Image 1: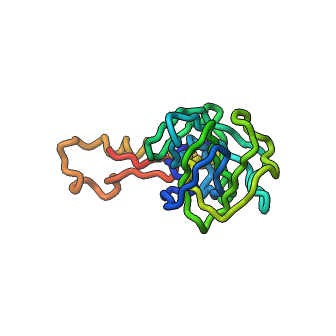
Image 2 (image 1 turned 30 degrees about the vertical axis):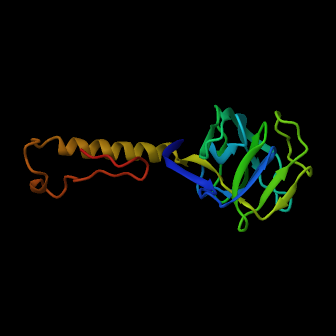
Image 3 (image 1 turned 120 degrees about the vertical axis):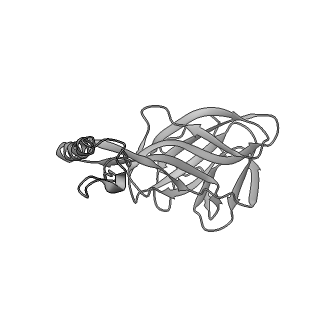
Length: 211
């Protein structure tokens, strides 16, 4: 049984000062900090002129190769010459990620576009000879690697797994706490309630609940 705990990101959330303009697949490595389900990928990119299509994908990370098997691709969106983060959402079923695991996060434009990156600190990769549309699976040696840290990141919802009895225990504990407090009139100041009445009901399984 999984419980939703909140959102987090992995990848490069900063906007790099270096730009490059081309039509290709590009991206870099990111490490998920927690188990979760990926909701979207955001890429700091703009069309060189007019509008172009953008879509993103998540790949298995393979050392010295950068990208291996395709995990999932996002929806396709249209972007223009506005300099901003562009977000592509995953459709259901959304892909899972696991704590401590490296992934290749990438974007692909249908025409010439300007990408932003840091020149060092990353493990980037690009592919110049592929016709736009279907994601290669696996990502193979058509491309080249560099040390660029592209401004691209994934947003995911953390999911923690618990056994059924753990969830029941917490639900019962919270229900009993609420029941105990309900025995006192609401006009009694909380600071005057007996010490055994919880002032704040928290659970490691659920978001904080106050009554």
